[in-house]
Image 1 (spheres, rainbow, N blue to C red):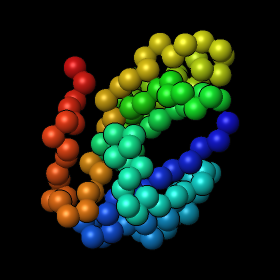
Image 2 (cartoon, rainbow, N blue to C red):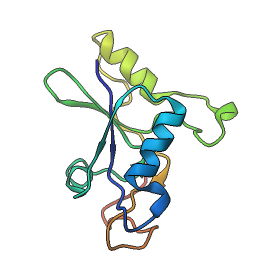
Image 3 (spheres, helix red, strand yellow):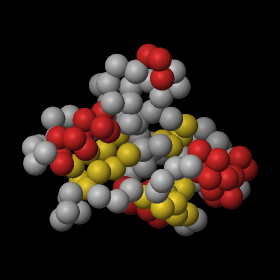
Amino acid sequence: MKFVGINSNSKNTYHEDDFPHMVQRMEENRFPWVYLYDESQDVARAYGALRTPHFYVFDRARKLVYTGRGVDSPRDTSRITVNDLENALREHLAGKSVSKPLTNPIGCNVKWDGKDAHWMPGEACDLV
């Protein structure tokens, strides 16, 4: 199993979310994954990334088995009642189908180049 973080934020939209600042945050928090930069934002568009973070779990055949949030209360960890990412990983690694393969990502929106810092694609929607 491998983990990769991809920063798709525009360096021109919100300076604090640019790649160098996020690399510094990654190092300060000792995140244990490879960290990449999607400067063109093509990866974010291809996968439909809406938020940071927006998680994607793929199987060995690179089929998407989960996408969405990590936990249900990332801003206040004392209120977490479900860890959707952990559940998806546990079920998948146990050879089971992921019981909840799609959840609404929670976080700041991706900072799109040439757009207002709060802009979201028209096709973006919250799950019911």
